[in-house]
Length: 240
Image (cartoon, rainbow, N blue to C red; front, side, top):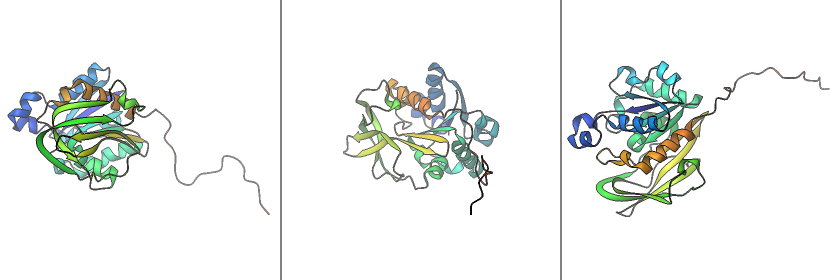
C-alpha cells in the first residue's frame, strides 16, 4: 500500500514553537510512524509544483493523509478537484485537524464544515463510541490529551456514515472528532486532534489511530463500475 502525506508546511517554517515540536514538519512525523508500521510512504507539500500532487503521484497513492490550516485558499482549484476525483475513484483520504476547512474536504462534504474553536490549553478526552470499529483496534475506552485546541459543536458536516470518536473538552464542549464517510468508491476518515503547537502526533495512541485509519481507508482493488447506456447481458424476449 502506498501512502502520501500532504502538509502545508508553513507553521513549521514560521513559528519557532512549531518548529521545535516538528523540526522536519508535521508531514515527516506522520510519514515516519506510518513507514515504521510497514507502509510505503512519501510526502508532499503546498509549495512544491502542483503542491506535490501531480497526476502521477495521485494515481499511485492508495491513501492520502491531509493536514492543512492557514493556507487553504492557496491550494489550486484544479488540484483540489483532481484529489476529489481520485477519492471518488477509490483513493482513501484521511483528513486531520484543520483539514476540515480544506477545499478538498468541503467539496466532498458539500457543507461549510464550520465549527467553534478555542486555543486555551484545554484538556481533551477522546472517547471511543464505536469499539467494534477497526480504527479503534488497540485503543482503550478513551485517549486523554493534556493540552489541545478545542473544537466544538455544531460541526457543519453531513451525518457521518460512522461515528467513531467523540471528544470532551475541559471548557465543557463536545465534538464529533472521528467520523467516516464514503464518497463514490473512496473512503474518508476525519480525525480532529493535531493542532500544530502541541505534540499530538508524537502521542503513540494518536499514531495508532491514524495508522488504523489508513488501513481502513484503503479500498479493495475491485473493478471500476461502468455507467451509462448498457447492452443487455441476455437476449430480451419480445413482449406482446
